[in-house]
Image (cartoon, rainbow, N blue to C red; front, top):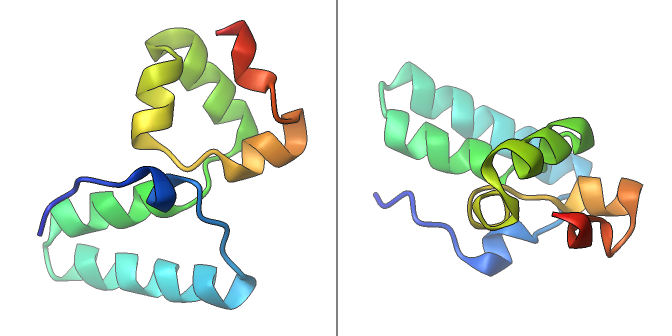
Length: 85
């Protein structure tokens, strides 16, 4: 299975139930030794806002946008928060 994520994947908001299911699928992938799938699933989860800022500062805006779901960070910091990077 490919770890490639689409822009829509990285902008998806999850309900609490969907997040629970995502955590379960991730744990199942880890238990099965499927690191590629586990990595893909983890990247779907909204990243903590503080980590999003750190990643943007260290690796750049494009890397963050291409590899992480920043929906929670955008809710916390506002729509234009990445403009400074």
